[in-house]
Length: 276
Image (cartoon, rainbow, N blue to C red; front, side, top):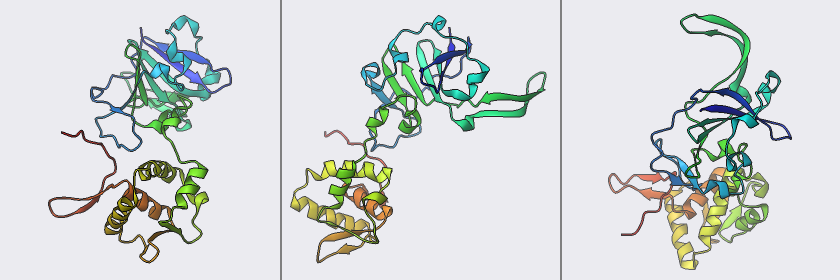
């Protein structure tokens, strides 16, 4: 039997039954080639990220660790509609999750179109997405998702996968001898996305010797013409988030030139290919 469960925003970690015997979501037909989560990879339209052994992760919720029994849950009351944090549709041992935001909970008069059209007066409705935010296959203990940030509020602590450089790591990176800050730009102006890129770049720089760095600096200069470089001091001048992003992309060697037409491009995501 299918069941739709709602998790509410409260201290008691309450779950409630919403409806039964309804199929809310359909299983996507493109789960067959999942990608292990990598914050450096941008999914194609027909791809999903996957986390295997999900029930063993620290961010797995207790709701998934036990066998589901519908008799354990009370019917949700009207007073709890505006407290819904996420929905979970359990269909044939597959759990479909959707985060519920204030914009998805609507309380307005609307026209219900059916064989007997009618006006519905200010009844709250929740917009159901075409695809869920996450899919958990219990029999395989695997979780599928497309956007990690969409499920932060469902699986508390899963943002550990979305690692950012700490304040100290960010300060240490900016103190590298090939960086010169300008225009009062500094650690407190660096936003979340670039902090993540800094964490990746710092791991990469650990494997560079001085000769490698010299090659990388030449490579960055070739592709980032508007990134100011002091030849005498061998320093890149960084004064904006965009300039820092260009430098970080260069360290990760994301720039390339096409073999035909000699067009310079930036790779938005990277997949390492196996050696033959």
